[in-house]
Length: 389
Image 1 (tube, rainbow, N blue to C red):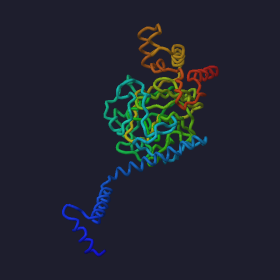
Image 2 (tube, rainbow, N blue to C red; image 1 turned 90 degrees about the vertical axis):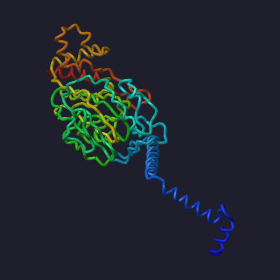
Image 3 (tube, rainbow, N blue to C red; image 1 turned 180 degrees about the vertical axis):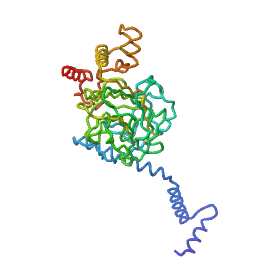
Image 4 (cartoon, rainbow, N blue to C red; image 1 turned 90 degrees about the horizontal axis):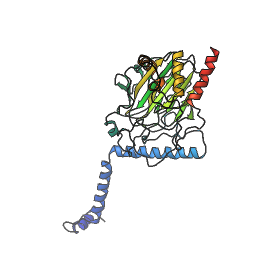
């Protein structure tokens, strides 16, 4: 049909009516226009979600076949999306885009378990919980000169904020003091939602390159022989190997670390209960406290950092704590003069309040059943060293 015939046919449809040809062309135009108006972000979220689904499928396949790998490339192929994926459960030791809840040290409203919110940023507007933050003196804080570019320090350099706008890799930071001979204990509080490829607490030597993986999503601490890292998934990392170590930790969790350079042991605590001894034979090495994160707008805070020499006074306080583990503070039940109690509280209060009874992971955890008691391992090591002296 000629163009004139088509026009005549559509005109014959009468006023207020559209002919078939114009109707089809108009519908096609509206469809193209609607697709053009689709926002760039909606397509981006679709891409992210499809990537999460593919990675979830690959992890499930790896776990089902007993593969050693975790289904994602440790060199940075895991997405740090803060969107909600379309699967409900994952193995406890697998990274997740959904923040970990229900693992807080306290029961504050902003730390309690809540339904997942698609906007993680709303959780940051809640006032920070102050539970467990009784210390006023700190042996060390975060080092503003030795950190990744994607970090920001606040609260007198005790709080580190990672990836302030968005995340494109892994950021890390270390303490401003080398942990020399003696006893070192510190606690890190998770002050933001905990999610993503990894958020870790651990130690490392000065040889660890904190900015090496700034464009790669990975578990930085424990990728080499110079560092050890405990992941929020419960995995312990060292030399690139992963070991099931504990249950997960999330927002509000307090992770304690005890580095005993005299006995050469590294011990982790979760919510002030011992998890287990992570490493031994660490004598004659120089370490720094370290943390790292791949999650956008995540943060951690030092709420305790103590140090003391390995003396007879320390060993006596350590043993007293093992004999009286059921009290919040051993000094409360000891028949000592008030002045001596105050001296011990100021110098070794952290030793007399530590809980060395092993915290058993829940049934849903991937924690290893072979983890030995913190107290028994450290006590045996101490007896051995005492006999030598």
